[in-house]
Length: 107
Image 1 (cartoon, rainbow, N blue to C red):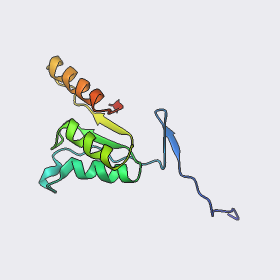
Image 2: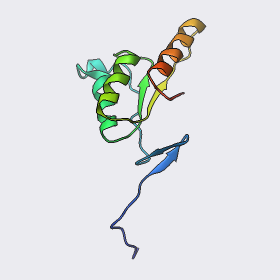
Image 3: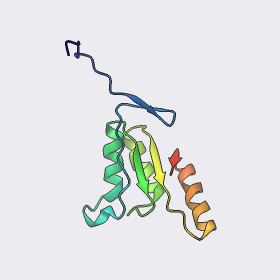
Image 4: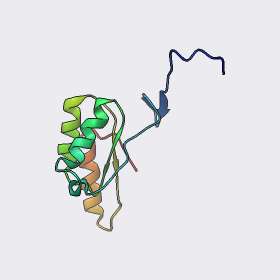
C-alpha cells in the first residue's frame, strides 16, 4: 500500500540466470496433436519475451529444430526435460545433442 508502482521489476534469478519474470514455459510432450508447428512455435513464443522454454523428451520436433527456431527469434534460456531411460547410450546421446544445441539446463 502507498508505494510507487510506476516502475515494477518482476525479474528473478533462477539457476544462475536472470529472467524477466518468475515464469517458464514448461515441457509438454507431443504438442503436434494440437498444433502443426508444435514445440517450434512454443519455443519461438518463449524466446520473443525472453522466457525459458523447457523442451520435453517427448517433443514432436527434434532438439536441434526447436533450438534453432528459438535462436532465430531471440537469445533466451532453453532447458531440456530428460526422461532417463534404461538405454544409457540413448540418454547420453540426447544430452550431447542438447548441449550442442545450446540448451543450457536439463532436469
